[in-house]
Length: 368
Ligand SMILES: [Zn+2]
Ligand SMILES: [Zn+2]
Image (tube, rainbow, N blue to C red):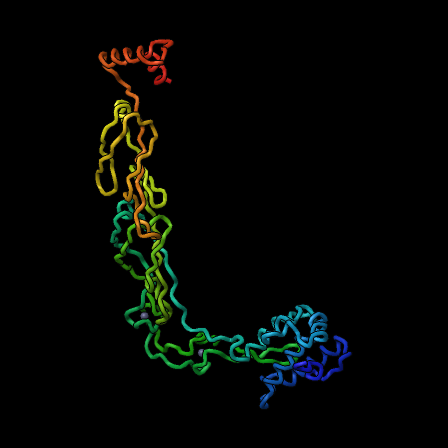
């Protein structure tokens, strides 16, 4: 058995929970480092707490009795061994305060706060996303006050309340007696320094709202929802603390010609039924300009043709996606007398048997 917690608390192995609790309270009062300045009292106080965390509740005590260790005290985290409400008051509150007395367990000195991150939503055209672009954005943010150079004023001196420590001791009456706790200094808010002559331009904050103009490089291939982080372009921190970051959230606007699907683009192109029947070579749009596309004879409506590598640049693979040209075969709405005759002649030579006149049927279809 590594440690005899019973002897640490000075109780027998058969001691009741009541006795253990009583012994612990007495010892905690006696060795609390804020009350007992003798050498080794802090160490002793920690041992007492460790012992109590093991024996103070039935479950961990059983574990300790059986295995010689108390799971709950592993790593010195005595908090976990306690069960709130054991003593009819909020035990955890008490310990939070007591432990603030030990460096590292609380009572952290709070320095000036880092500046906030900012978000800027930027809408760009598909062409910009395709080629990459450079944009200028303008926004308002807290920037370092030039008058006081971010210090908040002149005559910065050590805080007289905490003498630069940033924390102060305060005492509190508890069932264990009077304990002292460490809290942030109310005068300097934990910074350890105060400004004697507050800057009248920023009210002592060290930062003021200013307009900021920024050139932003948009990488090619960027898509809606992606963001660009610009480090240090968020709001200024308090009194020269680091600035936050700026996140530019991209939104690629809808395009009238191209529909984007990941790194691929889809463009719908009309095709006359004659072109579909005989085949043709047509001009199709790409984001980069016009391209030629061969349409084979007998092409059906909604057929997709692939233009390899004509899609968006992929930020994942560093290659380019494809463009798909979807042809939509169009039926003529108006026919000349000659065209009608030719098509009626065509109908006679095909399998189509027209119940009504072919063209009156067409007319019906369009008047619906
Ligand atoms: Zn200022
Ligand atoms: Zn202070």
